[in-house]
Image (cartoon, rainbow, N blue to C red; front, side, top):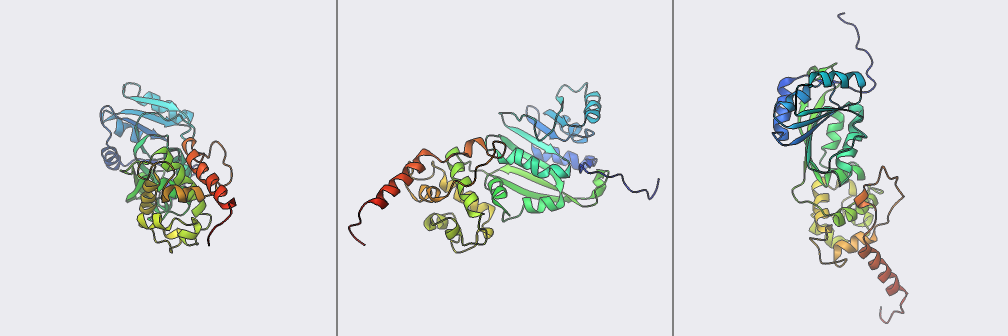
Length: 309
């Protein structure tokens, strides 16, 4: 009936129906024969169909039982499509490189980013995501808004490709959406470097208005090498600058062992409050033994009698 208001949609599910846009998403993702691609929150299967046409191996994940059943019927004869009835927040992700092309419910944007970008063990090779416009703005912002976003942006390039009109969806949302393109940064960071980066970000964003060198308790020389202004507030540090700092913190790019300004800066950072297993990436949970040794050696040096001033 004309003029009848849309039914409430508390889950934020708006199904992308623009076929031209879907074709562009599939092309931009690099999906092709032999590649593994996930459609997380597959809904009616419009994106799944576009991905299947590239010849890629497609995993369509849908939590709703009725929608999942429709997907199975629709792609029953498609040998390269597998439908999985599961929650995108809990489904097991592969250990080999994979791609994601998805238009998830807007309410699950943060949860999806945590799954894909938060755990350094997840081998995400790239993602094309349709999210709410407001979320896209803070995710793609030059300056991360908090430690978690900085953790994502220091390891991935997040680019806002374009605004998406509500008319591209069924039902249409009340706000604009946006296309986010996500790629791993070209210089990878080792597990050691990521542990040090995690500790530094947690320390820095406890005082986002503080000077960077004060919030990080020193390390001015390393900050300058990373292109950071030691006198600038933490909130002004860009994603690119955090990445450069992470590369310097990486044991492969610093002096051997715990020596040098990178390890010196990392060793000063407090471990912070304990996190639950679900919140803490497995490879960044504990400080390296070399940093612990450095701290012990400093305590011994401080307790020794001073011979000069």
